Image (cartoon, rainbow, N blue to C red; front, side, top):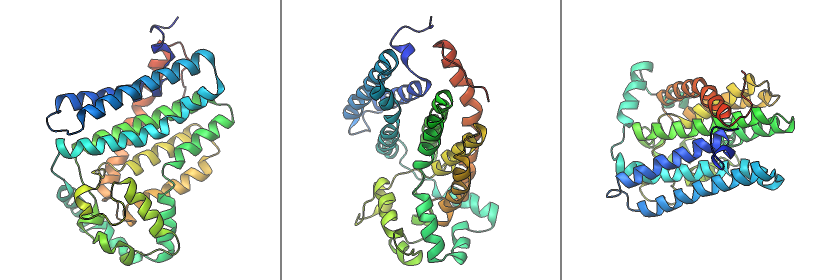
Length: 313
């Protein structure tokens, strides 16, 4: 028997991480309700998300319904994006000061100047086009890894990979609260002239507009630096990409032959395309190391409590 009563014992490890993070956000909304305009809406929404997670897990694990088992995986995709948006609305009221000057000074202390300006010397439209496309593949890399594992019916490994990725995303979100910043495309370069200074060939501008929209600054936004997401440190793109590269190698997935080279280019693109300072990448590496070190401990502890198989790495 599980140490937890039903429906708690139906939760997988990644469900637990989602629920705990939404409880954390709910507590923030309660404590700082005087500063957060939409705190009641967020709390209601968070409770709804938690209820959905419990429902999906219970039905999928109790009745083994194929559709609900698929949904039990798929809900994680919108949950990452939805959480990203809620964090956006919480950071500015709770952490109104940006720390770009600190990040810039650290980069200059390490490199003697600004890496994004150095990289401008090698910029050309073909390279920019390739790197913008690669940068846009960020959310697809974890999906490619998990699908590759599920195709081989490696369900335990797929569950573990999902857990590590979701855990990693939420750790990076905590980092955004610690050091809010907007990045070099606003502080060291002219954001409005980005398409002129760093042109691509065919779809670079289109992909940039998609990225900007996700970052809460759709095309035509006035004073974008005032409302863009504060999601620079640590570099979530670097952290999660390193996590996926690590998992693809550690789990000996054939997807590693695609993920490793594309992921390497993606990390380089974060600086070349002016989204991040190099210290953000270093921060992403440190967060990644913490994530992959603690993940098997947490995952296996939960699986033991719920009488599930443990992962052996």
